[in-house]
Image (cartoon, rainbow over all chains, first blue to last red):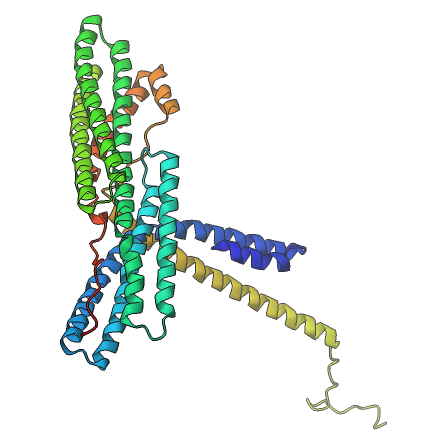
Length: 283
Length: 133
C-alpha cells in the first residue's frame, strides 16, 4: 500500500529539507499503517470465503428456479432471464473457488508448522495460477454483451473439466497444513523428552534415575508411534496426489486425518507421562 | 495667533496611520495560511490514525476470535533447547521445561486436525441442460 504513495511523493519532496521531513513522516505513518492493517485484515480470508459460499447457495437456488421455468415454458422472455441468471451463477461459482484458493494460500503462508519451503512455494504458485485463470474466465463471461446459453456452457465446460484438478489442489493444500501441524507437535514432544532425560540424569540418584528412565522409554515409544502415524498420513498424501478420482481423494484425505488424529492421541499420552516424570524429578 | 492655538482634535481630524508596505501584509497572510495548513494536516493525520487504529483493533479482535483454536507456535529452536539443557542454575531450566511441557499439552488439546471449515466447497459442476426442443 505505501509503495505507490512513496513513488508519488518522491519527485516532489526530495531536494528540500522541509519537504524531506514531511516525506519521512508520510513514509513512517504509511509503513506503520500498512504493516498493521495487513496483519489485521489478513484473517478476513475465511470470512470472505464463507460469505461467498453462502451467496453461492442463494444464486444457485435462483439458477435452478429460472432453469426449471425455462425448461417448462421455453419462451424468449424467460430464456433471456435464464441466461442472465446462469451468467451470475458462473461468476459466483468462480468467486467461491477464488476466495477458497486465497484462503488456502493465506493459511499456507501463515500457519506455523513443519512444511518444506519447496512444497509451500509449489502449492502457493499452483494456487496463484488457478486464481489468475479463474479471473480470466470471469473476464470472458463479463465480455459477453448478449450471452447465449451455448456461450456460457462453453465457458462452464472449461471450468468443469478442471473440477478434479481444482479439488485435488484443495485437498493437497489442506493435507499439507494438517501434516505440518502434527509434525511440529511431534518434534516438540521429542525435544521435551530429550530435556527430561537431561533433568533425570542430573538430578536423581542412580536407582531413581533408572526407574525414571524406564518411564521415559514409554514416552519415546509414544513419540515413535506418533511418528509412524505421521508416516502413514504422508503415504495417504502421496496417494491423494496420484489420483484424479474425486471419491478416492475424499477417502485418502479422510484416512490422512484419521492418521493425524491417532498421532495426536499418542502425543497426548506422551505428554501426560512427561508431566508425571517432571513432577517426580522436581520433588 | 489663531494658527498657534490648535483646536482639540476629533477622531476625524486624526492623522492617518501610515500603512505598512504591501510586502509585509502578504508575508503575514502567508504565515496565517501556513499555520492553518499545518493545523489541517495535523487534524487529517489524527483522524487517519484514529480510523486505522480503530480498524486494526477491530480486525485483530475478530481474527483472534476466529483463530483461537488453531494457533500453534513454532517448534523451539535448537539454540533455545541447548540453552535450557545446559543451564547451570536449576530453577530457570525447570520453569522452562515445565512451561514447554504444559504448553505442548495445551497445543495438543487445541489443535484442529479436522479443518472442517475449510474442506473444499461442494459446487455444482454439471450445469448443462437441454436448451433445444
